[in-house]
Image (cartoon, rainbow, N blue to C red):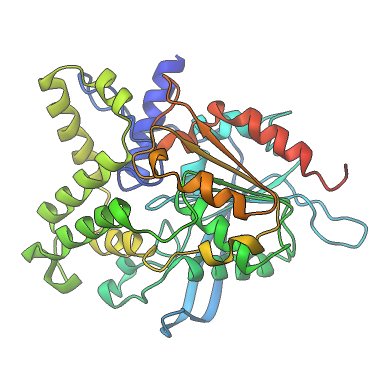
Amino acid sequence: MFLRTVQMMIASCLMLCTAALCQTMSLSPANQAPAPAAQPSKWPAVDGTVVLPNFRFGSGEMLPELKLHYLTLGTPHRNAAGHVDNAVLLLHGTGGNAHSLMNPLFSDVLFGPGAPLDITKYFLILPDDIGHGESSKPSDGLHAHFPAYDYDDMVASQRMMLDHMKIDHLRLILGTSMGCMQSCVWGETYPGFADALAPFACLPVQIAGRNRMMRYMAIQAVKQDPAWMEGEYKTEPVQGLRTANEIILMMGSSPLQMQKQAPTRDAAEKYIDQSLARVLASTDANDLIYQMNASRNYDPRPNLDKITTPILWINSADDFINPPELGIAEREVKRMPNARFILIPISDATRGHGTHTVAAVWKDYLAEFMQATDPRQ
């Protein structure tokens, strides 16, 4: 039963996350039929939407109305001064949405009674970022004329969303992949707004080297498909999207898990065909381009020493997107006054970049961190 649940969630993860960057790429075994669609989450999430008028992007562009969709779990608690003191912001990865972190591999481990993010204790907020989910995005109609958003815009809109919700302080910001990088932006842009930061699966430096090469190749694969038509396509540019998602799939995957799940040539080829068929059925080309390019000017490194909020930073050793051999994490963590970096060793439990969603691997670190940063202690 456990194996079946894991398989279902992993398949769902692929469909939600444009193949790899935000969630695990460990799909159902290649020699089996595609896993059935994931069942509705058992967690009682409540939908919310805020419309931000005349939202101005860092590029200078503006939307008359920016819609942000979000989910909440739990109940806000107000202290004696009337301020919410138990809000936790959970940030998804590239191509994902609020439902990405409702994945049982994440939610069932963290949200239950006595768990690190127990919803009877905390008020969890899971937004769809700009360009994702049910929030405003290129595929809504503006196509390639949608404002060129970046991570700064995403964080600014998250802050405005919280203002609308009458929340002026956060107990924790936990972000995965893209959300990991946004956690760094939060730390330097709004110091003191959160009691703690938990960035999982990223590096606090400019997206360069192979990471940017991969993103650029994926973007160019779509744009150079004649069917893209400068973003005004009538049908999806399938060949460009296929190539882009092949690149993304390999970058987000775990060599150990790939070998176990596809131990023969036929199994490996079937795995790819089934995986891409699923993701291509739910991917919009313009949305993918914008999502991949949103990291283009991310670079918190110059201000890392100003991030004084306690930080629990976790990467996994089999993360092909943020490989440990670069030595970046070990170098940069020393510049943040209250940061702890943990590198999870490769094991049967890790899932490459997607280890950030397999909460059983790192939940004990998070539990310890929540206790250590409890302002009531």
